[in-house]
Image 1 (cartoon, helix red, strand yellow):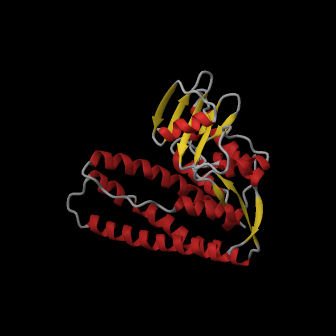
Image 2: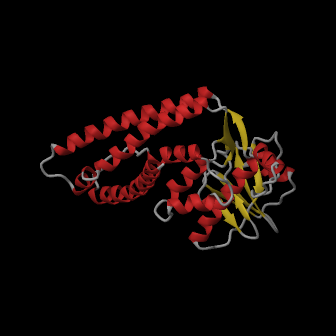
Image 3: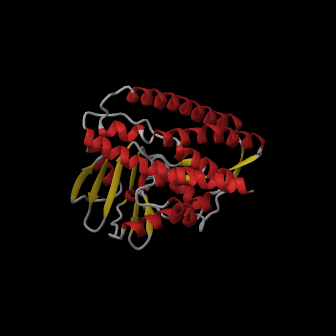
Length: 297
């Protein structure tokens, strides 16, 4: 608290009220509000974005030497979720387009990604095979167990797709000289988009230079229940095109299923498994369309 008061004093901000929400402080003065967060400094990120003519972030008050982040608080309008989601898709596309560049392929990094995904798929295949075998031995399955085992083919289908295509992705990049990178927000969600006179992305703590499609993976995993995947791709590409290999990696990342575990609450297990099956079914549908289109070529 004393540290915050010193920061406000140094910035000539007279606080009328202080309110802590999670890891941030909301500071209200006579005519403005500010957001303060300790041990974070987004200055280098904001400075870089400004050089790329991207200004959709809060106005910051700290400099590059501070070990805190102090920026203006943005009051956001209440707009329909569908419109806000559409805005988030387009703004992420603008961010990627304005910071996009080609970089020589770092084969060691690509190999690390390849080995990580391959290892994860091997583990998940064994995990679900063992789980399937165990459930098959149960005389009276719970509704959640029956729901999962009756849809186990969906897990195997997607894991097999990833197992095959991660090799194709890796082999392609071994021969490719450059790869596209951009600044990615790396924490995109509707909560991190604020809209009033402009559109602003907040919570840049995890931002980094990486492959743009990773932001799309985050958006879809957060909003898959209300978002059509083909619509996401179509709207995003109004701002920046996705290469075929980027789209493949996008599908690979989405198609890796999480590890499902049962709890003592059968009703909750059924609800969560059924909801997750919706997600996997949507991914499987896109995978099937891709496979069918490649067969026609």
